[in-house]
Length: 191
Length: 191
DNA sequence: GCTTACACTTGACCTATGTTAAGAAATGAA
DNA sequence: TTCATTTCTTAACATAGGTCAAGTGTAAGC
Image (tube, rainbow over all chains, first blue to last red; front, side, top):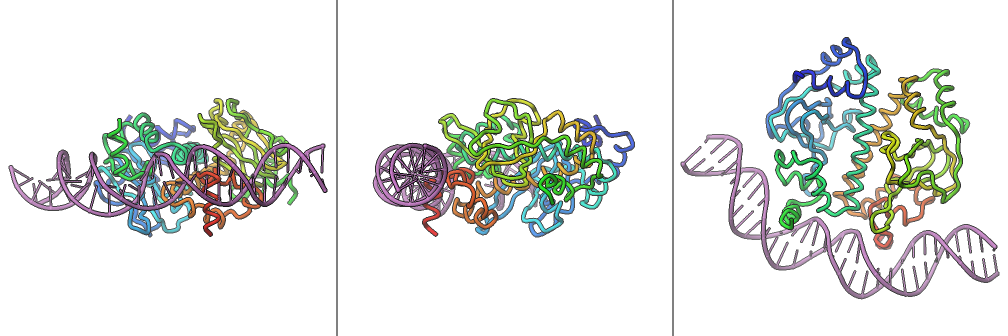
C-alpha cells in the first residue's frame, strides 16, 4: 500500500467509493510537510484546513490566562487533526497545532471539503462514522478524567497507547492526562 | 409545528430531504412513553434503540465498583439519547438510562437505523453533523473538567443551560459536573 | 565534542474537592 | 394534613494532586 493511498485505504474501511471517487478525493487534497516544532495553526487564526497525518506526530493545545499550555490532542500516523470547531464554523481558533516530529500531511480546505462531501455522498458516511467514534472516545476520556485517578488513567494509556511513550515527551503526556509533569513523575516512581 | 414532526424539523435544519423521505423516516420510528424513574436501558443489556426525546428529561449513568452512580448525560426535549457505543456495536452496555420526568420518545432499532441510512443518504449528513457537534461539545466539557475549577464549570452551566436547574435535582447536576453533591452545595453557598 | 536548552525528578508545602455523618428542608403519596 | 422519602446543606476531617523551587539528566544544534 503506497503512502499516497493511505487515506483511501482508511476511507474504504467504512464506506464504498468508486475508482472515480478515489481520484476526485486525492485531487482535492494537497500534500504538505512540516518540520518538528513548527506550527500548523496558531491561536487567533481560522483553521483553514483539516489534515490527515500520513506520517509523524502533532499536538494541539491552548494557552490559558496564566500562560500555561493545555494539550487536548496528540495525534500520530493515519489520524486526522484540526480544530474542527474553527474549521467548520470558519471562526478564529483558540488552539495551536504544532508538530512534535517532522511530519507529512494531506490537507483540504473548508470550501473544498464541503464541496467534496456534496460530490461524494459516500464520504458523509465515512465522516459520520469518524465523528461517531471520536465522540465515543471523547466521552470515555471525560469519564476517566472525572471519576478515575490519574494513576489509573496513566496505566490505561500505557496499555492502550504504548507507542506514544516512545515518541512524545512526558510533559505533553501529563498535560493530555490532565495532570502536571510533577504528578506524572510521582506516579511513574510509585510503580 | 405539530409534535410528530419535531424530528423532521431538526433533520431539515442540516440536510435536505424529500416529502417521501420524511414519510419513510417517520414510519421507521416508533413512538414510546416512559414514566418518571423508569428505565429505558439497564446496564448489561444491549442498547437496541436510539431515542429522540420529543418531550421530557432523561439521564444516563453508570455504577462504579463501589456502587456510586456517575452521570454522563442529561438530555431534554429535542435531543437524542442512547448508549451509542452499545447501539452501534450491539454489545452489552455498561450504562443505564432513566427518565427524570414522564417522557415521550421516538425510537428506532439498530437494524432499521442502518437500513434507513442506506435508503436515505441525506441522513448520513444529518448524523455526521450531529456527531460532529456532539464531539466538539464533549471535548469542551473535557477541557473544562481537566483545567477549570468546579465553580467555573457550575457558573458556565448556569449560564448556558439554566433550564436544567429548574428540572433536574442538584445531586444529578453535581455528578454531571464531576463533583459530589456536598461540593456543589458549598459552591452554591459561596455565591 | 561543547554548549545550551529542554526534559525529567524530587521535596516541602498548599488547596480544592472528597468522605463521613448528621440533620434540615422540600416534595409527593395516602 | 400528615408521614415517608427524597433532596439539600453543613461541619470536621482526609487526601490527591497542584505549586514552587531546586537540581539532575539528556539531546539538538553549532
